[in-house]
Amino acid sequence: MEGERSENSFQEIVGESPGLKRMLALATKVARNDAPVLILGEPGSGKESIARAVHRISARRNNSFVKVHCATAADAMLASELFGLEKGGEGKSGKVGHLELANKGILFLDEIAHMPLDLQVKLVRLLERRKFERQGGTTSIQVNVRLIAATRYHLGERVAEQMFRRDLYDQLNVFPIWVPPLRERRDDIPLLARYFMQTFARRMNKHIESIPDETMSFLMNSEWPGNVRQLENLIERSVVLTEGSALQVPLARGSPNPM
Image (cartoon, rainbow, N blue to C red; front, top):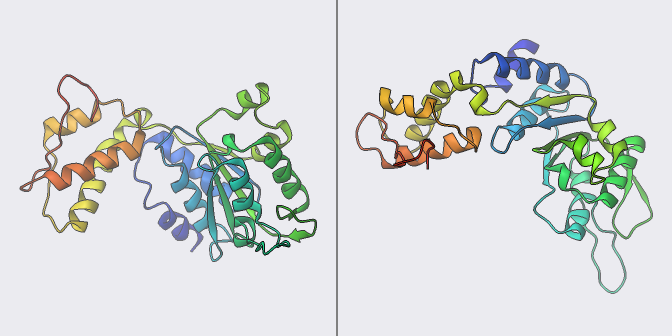
């Protein structure tokens, strides 16, 4: 049963390349304990998909998976979003933060390299004590959360630049998982392209059955700076534009990369 659950949990992560298989094997091992996890990889490489798969395999699979994107909010907003707000005077209402919402489950901190240093201090305390205080509050709240963090940046370099705390990096770096970029797993491109084609064709009620050899060669030889997400977006657009049973991919003139 354990093996079946692990296999099913990775169904949305398509590929057979050696690098991908090594990464999935490590993710499976990591999922079976409760230590923090650090997922590293380029934008669009599938870091969140790995985090969600770890959640589905883990003992916390029946509890919440809560995502916080650390790069999309101002510092004060991120603090209240993550830790919540204490109810105060003058009609100020309290707010439950994502930490409390993720209790007994997993909190996924995307692009943790952008987290302000003062919030990193609070996160270290959380990992050490499993307690935190809401913004503006003094009462400690006990919480049972597994932390998964992800970033495109090399956190060791951010530590050297004094932009990331060494103690937090050490706590997160117990089980680092590197997600390989698409250009390092080119043999997976045909599998991914067909998977996305079939998924979007079914969703749009279209009967698209094949990808021409010339088109596949183009896909195989492109650099994909946006990784799997870029390929997925291109295939979705192609399915929208296709008339007939063969996928029609809009190729950019004078450029080796899909546009």
